[in-house]
Length: 96
Image (tube, rainbow, N blue to C red):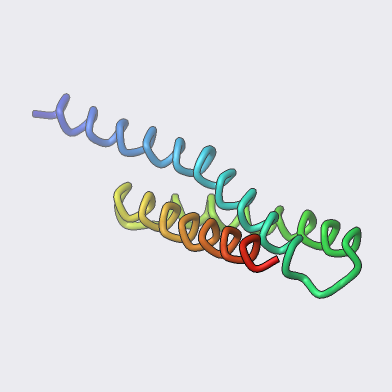
């Protein structure tokens, strides 16, 4: 019984680590791309601002993953914003 609980705990931590590393990167990349396109400034300033904000986005994504109540909620908290940001980026590109 103890081995099963320990394995469950370790798999949960591994899942959260993967969500933080890969999912956080994906959310950050999508947020940076969307911000670089929609910020109302000169293109180079928009890209620089979006890139600087990406550090904050990634930090918040990692904090969210490890603060969530379960690994499932952590994944939902990464996948849902990624989907919204991806749709926003697609919508912006279709209107441009």
